[in-house]
Image (cartoon, rainbow, N blue to C red; front, side, top):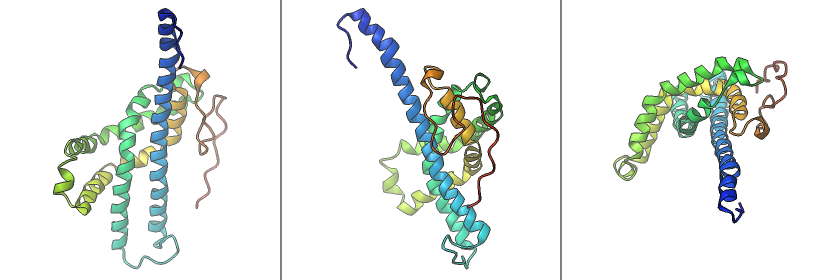
Length: 213
């Protein structure tokens, strides 16, 4: 950003141009971080559900042993926690900016309390994780890799209901956070390719249920 030589004009440019643009950029970055994390969780969650429902691997080979499901659930919980921590870190501030009644989707107001409640129910696991982060230099020396994975898996299982809530309500979250971008409606960010309802025109009719894959 090029600033004018005059101090007053420079201060005005920083206050009214640079800082608002910076806040919008942070808003978009945090939103994209949350959405990307949820999409990675969603893919693994759908794969695990399909395997559990069918009793077969994705290549149609039978599982053969129900204990394999338990192991898969543990592995999913481990990976899901690593992604969901991004939601726990960035989503609270984004949710605090949402005002559904001021958007084209006021009915989303019903989803936001469920999202906040899911975050609240994850607080104990989040606090424990942050406590471990302060021991990053000692934990790897005291815990073998497989035990460290078990710690993450335990946290993932603890927040699994919250993860499922966020997967179910992610579209309402995205719509509302895009509408709440700092700077007002003129600076609304583009919707993700997956979500076609996130736009500034009146909301369309409800979509047909997605085809089962």
